[in-house]
Length: 259
Ligand code: 7PM
Image 1 (spheres, helix red, strand yellow):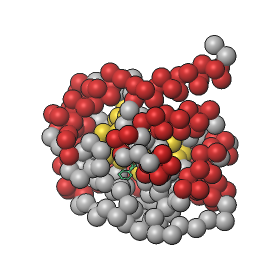
Image 2: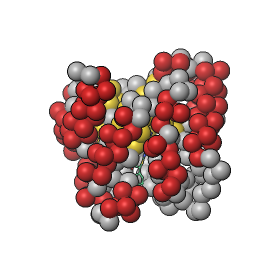
Image 3: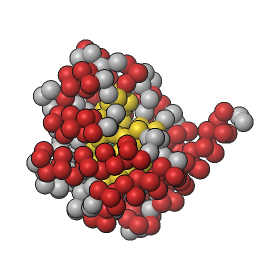
Image 4: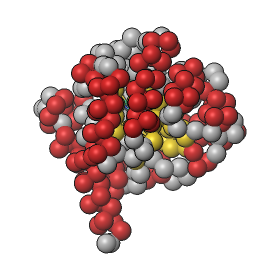
C-alpha cells in the first residue's frame, strides 16, 4: 500500500503534491514501483494535528482519486474517519476505507456495509491530538487484539463481509516505543483473529528515536521492520517507499514459501 498524502501540512510529501495533477503523478510512481493499493489521505493524523472539515477534505481527495482511477488499474483506499468523505471518495472510485477510528463514527459501519467496500480497522488509543500523552497498557498485544476482535465483530454484525476486513495495530497511535515493539513482535496474535493484518511503520518517529535519523533518513530502518512484520504474518505494508519495501518483503516471502 503506497501512501499518497494530499494534505498541505503533511510531514513528508503532502505539501509538494498539493494539486490533483501532481498527486496523480506521484500515484503513477507508486503504481510503477508495484503498489497494489494507493492510500489517499486528506487529513493529517499526526500527533497534535488540528481536525479538517469534511468539505475541505473532500475537495482535496476527490479530484486526486478521480485522476488515479482514470489513469491506473490500481485499488484506491481513502484514509478518513468521516462517513461523508468515505461516500464522496467511494463515488469517485475508491474501493477501500482506511479509518484510523476503525469506523466508530456514527454511520461508518453501515455505510461500508451498504457500499460493499473493503475496510481497514486500526487500533488507536485516544485521538490524534492527545494520543501520545502518556499512553499506558497492561498487555498491549492482548488489549489491541481484544479491541480489533470487537471492532471486527461489530463490522460483521453491521453486514460487512468477512473477506472485506483488514486489521491494523496502529503503530505509533497512542503507543510508547515499547508498545510499538511489543506489537511488532506480536503480529501473529493479531493475524490469528481471522483477517489479514496491515502494518504502517514507514518513516515513523520511533525509527528516528532508535537510529537517530531524520524523517528522510528512515528508509532502511523501515525496511527492517517491514521484513520483520511480514515474517510475523502481516499481509499488507503501508509505505512511502514502495519499490524497496516490495523487494524486502518479496525476499521474505520467497524464503518462507521455500521458492
Ligand atoms: C504524522 C504522523 C503524519 C503519523 C502521518 C502519520 C497509519 C495510517 C497513518 C497506519 C493505517 C503516517 C501516519 N498511519 N493508516 N495512517 N495504519 N491504516 O506515518 O499505521 O503515515 S498516518
